[in-house]
Length: 69
Image (tube, rainbow, N blue to C red; front, side, top):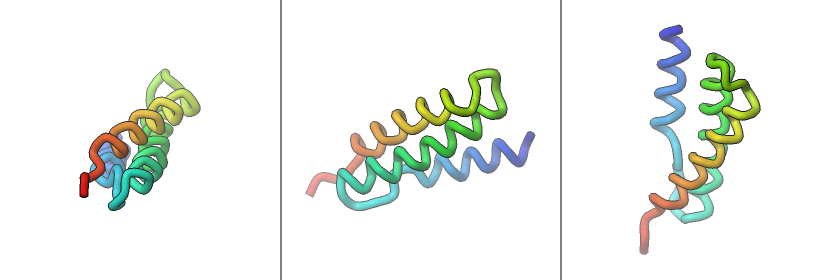
């Protein structure tokens, strides 16, 4: 169980890598979907709902935290 939590923390710490708004939204969504799928597989939520929620949250956070030039 500890290795899954460690993996989830690594994935969450790498969210939203990129310079532009679009890059951060896409990478945040991808990393969020992967993290959500992992968490969903380990909980009663399920794989697909976890990936959908994680992807949506990751994309939103990635887009919202894009640097303004």
